[in-house]
Amino acid sequence: MFDVNRIRKDFPILEEEIYGKPLVYLDNGATTQRPLQVVERMTEYYLRYNSNVHRGVHYLSNKCTDANEQARETVREFINAVSTDEIIFTRGTTESINLVAHSFGEAFIREGDEIIVTEMEHHANIVPWQMLCERKKAVLKVVPFNGKGELNMEEFGKLLNERVKLVGVAYVSNVLGTVNPVKEIIDAAHAFGAYVLVDGAQAIQHIPVDMQALDCDFFAFSGHKVYGPTGVGVLYGKRGLLEQMPPWQGGGEMIKEVRFEKTTYNDLPFKFEAGTPDFIGVIGLGEALEYVKGIGLQDIASYEHDLMNYAMEQIRTVPNIILFGEAAEKSSVISFGIGGIHHFDLGTLLDKMGIAIRTGQLCAEPVMQHYGVTGMARASIAMYNTREEIDVFCEGLRKIEKIFKL
Ligand code: PLP
Image (tube, rainbow, N blue to C red; front, side, top):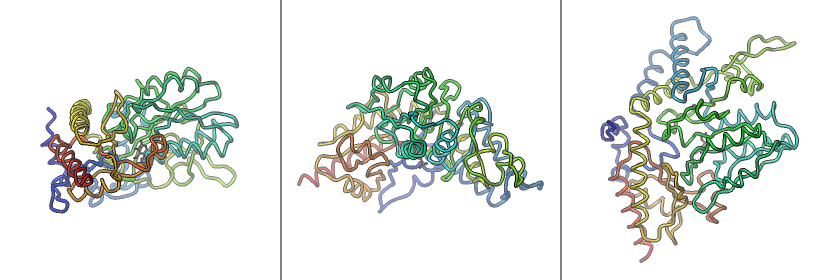
């Protein structure tokens, strides 16, 4: 059974006080906290086993190599990919998308081709495609969203044609919380021969994902948003596609044979993992996914769903509240403002009450432009948040609203 109080004990930071007030951490969309299990596993590897992977014949090197490859299998199972050859370790979602933009872009994008993204993407799923379009003289098209923060699927349908080579879409918007109909998008894109990259940065910690059922071509996520370490993430790609893509970075480990006349490249997934990876980060990510699996992502999802509904209900009672994003399918993120109060003031005053939220443009300037605002405040929940914390947060908002009204 899902027991939030037991889970909270695994996260010592949740016991901290900020300015003498118990910490209420509602900035999980930016980064989640790490449980003891992850930190202890990484510490154990740093203190007892540290040695470079895939290179040595000695005990320590083999120990780290085995743990690194075990983590790859854990990721494969977590997202139900067919093979560990399809799991490439990167520095995070941003690097995963850049890898695809460079390597897939090199092999598959020609002048006049089209790439589709949506108006609600994080900059990480916009800028690499813009850079690719500039390099290749390709064209970037954008699917707009409506007043509730839902994608205009009719417009998406109109944008699809034979020139479209790739569609990049967030599974969950980091500003609006919208859970996009990615399966529908993937099937529609495939019908036109286009490939699909799903940005899973805000989905992997909240929604069970299954690569084989989704049938997306690429899926990217970051370790630090799923209770794992920073500096490590994953690119999933279908094997047949990855095999047709050239390496992105050159160096150690990604080669088979190096000759000055001609170098040949390693097999998947190593072809895309040049240089010493953050193998202890990878081991920590594996531990984080095991931790989540142990609790059960389905149970986490239903607990968070209930908490989100409660949070939306409560925040609506705050006078002068403005909510951005009220999609029917919404997850984990509440972006808001209070009439007449700058988002920066909201964040600063909440901080003084021990409440951590995010403020600003949320790495999604096109969403800010859509609403004509300079920034927003954002509360984002994780599996260890509670109704009591939501109450403290909403009470804080009420106090701030009153202060500014005086
Ligand atoms: N995509 C989305 C939807 C995000 O929310 C984020 C981070 O907030 C990213 C991409 C980028 O992730 P990272 O900075 O870990 O590479």
